[in-house]
Length: 244
Image (cartoon, rainbow, N blue to C red; front, side, top):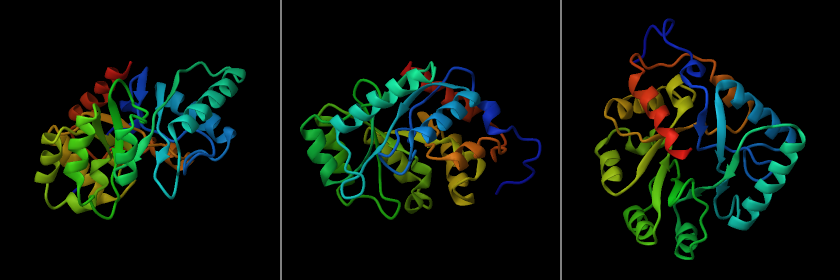
């Protein structure tokens, strides 16, 4: 349980200048993130004020909902970067993708058609309802194909909350774990915040991301974190320097 948050830091104050965000939805009109280029400008400007100076934006690739392709994402990123340059935005914007772990994803990685965060690191996610039946086969095949999975927001998978051994199993299967920063302020609910707290305490996180889609996410950076001891959180935030 979380009590007495009054004296705890505001999330934005824990973000160091020069921070790197590896998970966001900033490209306009391509998924459930920014709808327009004006939204993109607002979100990037707001994230810069928070302290982020490099962005690896990660539109969804989710067959049947957001049928993005490597080529389509790259083209949208180039178009967006060119527009931002005319608006005097001085920041590196790199595009990867957040891939749903499903059969379509397996087809993509077997063809070598993935956009990675860096080198062979690829951002993946699961359904919030349940893990894929063949999850560990997928993870194994992904690594055989030469990629390393970074699992987005593991704290949000409620089906693991009562069995934390599953998180260690994922780590042992080669997954890096990426914390959604807003989980630490309770944005996704108290159960998710509690799961994030436990994962931090157990040292299971490797990286963080904003997962920003819209203004409400930006506003949540002004809330106080629910975690009493923020040392582990600050250390994981610093791990994102790997992506320089």
